[in-house]
Image (cartoon, rainbow, N blue to C red; front, top):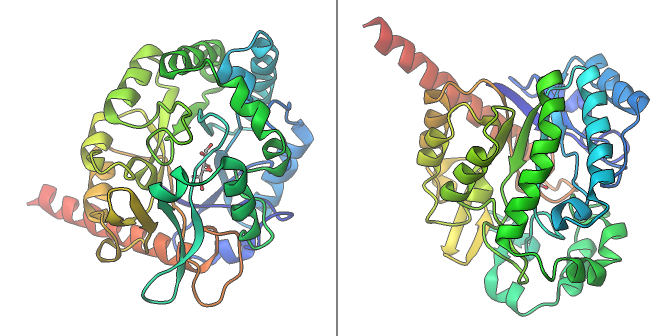
Length: 360
Ligand code: DNO
């Protein structure tokens, strides 16, 4: 595996490439052109300058998170082909720039959903948290207002103000879209982009829905082992793969994370590894990466990735806000650096144990 950190670009991130380069064992970043909007064709010069900036700092551009999908594609409106053509052009340009991993999601209207961005944990750190009763009691527009008010002045991924300004229209667009329609629209999109992915060897890595169930009555499909295997089979091409995000699939306690990883052998192109602490099945908060701080067995997750021969990029995911850092919630330097070091430690131990066992 290749240990990476997510980086939003020098215009948007409080963390610098120089800082990332100094985290032991981190060799690359996962980045994006954060200023682009879904549906836009990415400019070659912008892709190349992002890549050059990253490489000049001694890191690799290990992949893109995300090239976002326009709602017309998810809804399947008559103009979707135009947006798919644009997406294909962006993929071609990324392929020509030697980028071979694209993370995306197929969640209607919002990306991830949390009800709090700074819940205080017993150690005084603050974390993102989710409470179902709070979601049930709030209007989506008010949730957006409350999240942006506590985002430390940063733009949260998937909650871009330009899109949120049209939240009512967005909800209307999805009125007739149920899970089956969403699956069909995803299939249509993937079938159209796969020839380009084959040509440029681009691994598409769908990010799970977070939380892994329907919110605000919107359909969500990338939620469970059965659904993700259905998606792999419906477009059975190795370039149609997944981002295995433990913190997103893990929101549903019925998801057996190591078992899901093993069942996706060959199709996991990217891994987000983080821990959650459950207070009840519908109230959870993000924890430190360490197993003992949360509800997941991080050793078993890393072991499953090792067992399937995972070689792709991996990143610690959301970190807690610690040591008085002010950054985009979930995306500060300190706790993610601790997470990277811990995950690297687990991996080294698993690897060495395996070598010892094979030698004896
Ligand atoms: C949250 C992230 C997601 C993810 C997208 C991928 O912090 O994991 O926003 O990047 O869902 O498109």
